[in-house]
Length: 382
Image 1: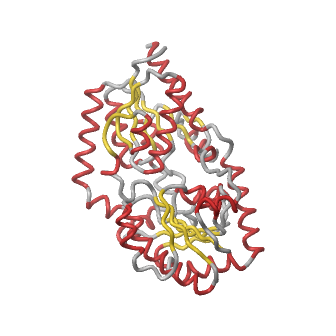
Image 2 (image 1 turned 90 degrees about the vertical axis):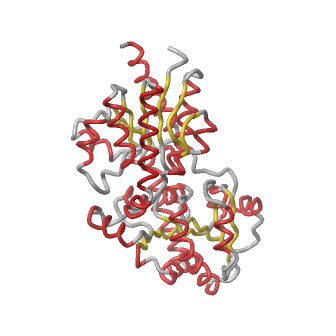
Image 3 (image 1 turned 90 degrees about the horizontal axis):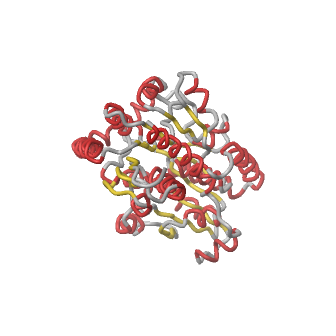
């Protein structure tokens, strides 16, 4: 089997774009003739995807979705039409569940086999979605071992492939080398990671900046590094940083160099918390939603912890400050404690070592690609 087989692939977030691009590369390594259409970001397009730009649909929270509902529906209709026009042999959906599960239904109606890569967080909220997934998805590829029994109990064809970040979240440099590469000459370095979506940055960065100012007053010779997602416009950040009361250096990308150079981090809840964990950086997890989105989430989420490191370990190993608790003073206090208390730093790092062990070995993209390719071979034999 080779060439001219078409894969419809959709992601709607920065992390999905990253993992989708690596999946496309891994599939092309197996069969260079594969064709990819659908929706993604710059990374997926550079890897060979032809289709829509995901930046038009990347939103956070229920209230934010309603604000962009018209645009979301327009993109959905265009992708639905693409399913009919391109007639792909298989569809792969990456995370982004509220959008992708609806699109999976459209693929299923057309008799297109559906693979879901990176499961919706059914273990965190809306567990009833597993039954819906069972109806729509031919094969679920999960990235955490504890997800397997959740799907097996509902007779979903599930396979654990490992977490794609296990092969990405590393830096060959030492801490000193990373600091040299970033031009840093300070004793203490704190990373600020406000998220990859514009709404997250607008909501979280001002609070994180206020916290940084408080930290700099308590801890002398401290500098703050702000690694920016590629989709965040520099002009947006410069507008925020004009009013900074401490030294905050924005860096485009280079997140793993920044984390290697850092003694601690202030991190928005999401994929970045796992990246920081895999780099063994002590952190405080911070998150805020609009009031309406927060109330909605509070009703649906029945978990004590929302940070991935804590969920993976089944216990609180790093501090979480959510919504009203995410004040500049509370954030600053936790980071100051981490920087001043060597024993605390060591205990957090020990917990993060456990996260690293549970996430598993590198090679998730290649394993996921082989599952997708095997499904393609089944299509070819029909």
